[in-house]
Amino acid sequence: MSEIQKISDIINNLQEIMKAHGDLPLVTANDDEGNGFNYVYFDPTVGTYDGERDGEFMSEKNQEEITEEDEEDDSYGPYENKVVCIN
Image 1 (cartoon, rainbow, N blue to C red):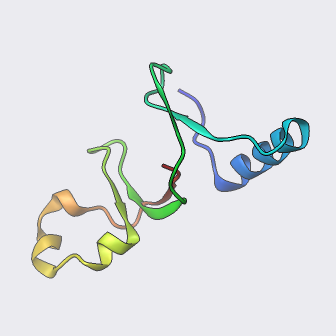
Image 2 (image 1 turned 60 degrees about the vertical axis):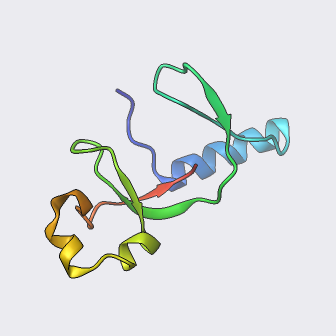
Image 3 (image 1 turned 90 degrees about the horizontal axis):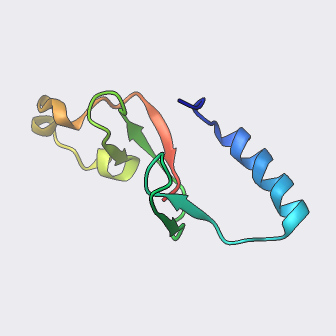
């Protein structure tokens, strides 16, 4: 498995690519084997993600809408693992 990338890693890599090749469109892989690709249409979004537990992403906006009753349901957590979703 590859090392988890940070925002600074991606920014640095993209700046080098843009210098060499210009302002190209972005695509993202459907899976880690490259079995399909899609254009990136959406702005980056901050939220939480638990890849080891359920693989679900929840944006900060959606987290603000969660009620106390929802918080008792463990499918809504954890809330402390912040990430940025790029598509």
